[in-house]
Length: 300
Image (cartoon, rainbow, N blue to C red; front, top):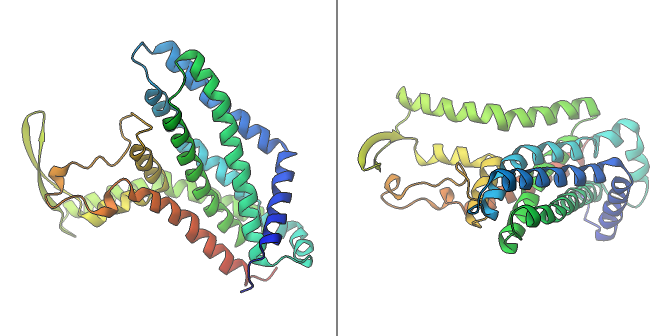
């Protein structure tokens, strides 16, 4: 495997970014997120009351970004490398003093910058609407929310770049992107449901716990720690858990919120919400490493 040339990576990333800025992609994404934030602010401001807070607003927006950001990231990464392989322009690019690893990293950085700046512009402009309809947003919470949303998008972008690097056509790459979306929004939920059924059927043992709800004690069997960990691997769940760490969101369903009653010996570190940051980082690093290793050996 060739070494990384920082100058080459920067050149590829800069060209990729400039090409995107000249297209509808950059401005379309910025407009999309501005509309999402603006509509959420308007809805919260119009239907809310004096107690409505920035956290309530972010709770509403986060429900949308959890679904939309992966779609945008997968769209951005779809043709990143597969498109150039299909057209043959990748050979022209590699005829210049660029290695294959430089191409993967450059494409990733260029498109990550497009995604990040699009989100940033949309949310910053949307903050004006928030200030008018509600009140000036809490800067720390708002900045934390934006940062986590960008990290979430970059994680999905890493998956998209990896898939694009191992496919020869945009058709196959597009099918792979659709498969990723189905995996995390359909199959993963079915997997968690299946684990619950298998536990109930006695294929593996759960953990007997007692929990107090509304003053009444309830005894039931929960999934073992490893089963709960499977749930948190989903990038969307990791994103939600990470938001709960920075106290940026007040909305039901965010954060694992495991009760101490379920873990008499304490919640394992890998089930604590702070660990979700590491899960998102893994979704960034591992697919990128796979893309580099695979693309370095493919026959163009």
